[in-house]
Length: 229
Image 1 (cartoon, rainbow, N blue to C red):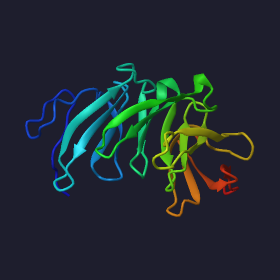
Image 2 (image 1 turned 135 degrees about the vertical axis):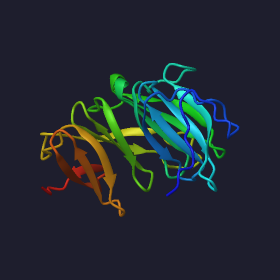
Image 3 (image 1 turned 180 degrees about the horizontal axis):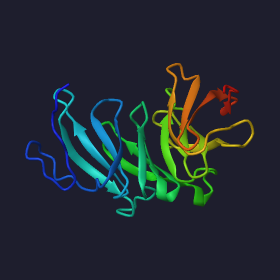
């Protein structure tokens, strides 16, 4: 391992052609797009999404652009807490913890992002997602799973994964699981999640209960707890 460089809020890196980094106050989550061309950063304090070009040969970054909640029509990024990009590179989702929201951006072949709207609990787009903390999509890009820390939930959305569709990337509420509801226990304060490589098992880390939850996936288009303790 060898250090390459750093990109800092408000600083113009003389080593690349990009402008000074803007709207990256208190970055909290980072991901690399599936094509390896861009790095996306969710920034909590600036309620924003920052985008960097990634040089696949050297690993060097160059600031490209940023999107801030309330600027140029962008909404749903208040208290941005996590970011995920679809495996087909067509869509980026960002959680707005302070708005109980999921913001959606389309992504073209050059990596340019375009804001497409938000899904928000206040508009009844879904239920059970207070202060979302983490999100993850399925390998087939047909599901999006989101954790709500405030009400100890996991919300499942179905996702339009038809390439070229005018609604590609759109989300539809499917199901939610909540701590101490039904068979689910010990899921207070969920903070992180991951899928097994075969997509069969979804694991959730519950920060308050000091527990790991195991769910089976894709049963009747919903998620169900598998009874494992």
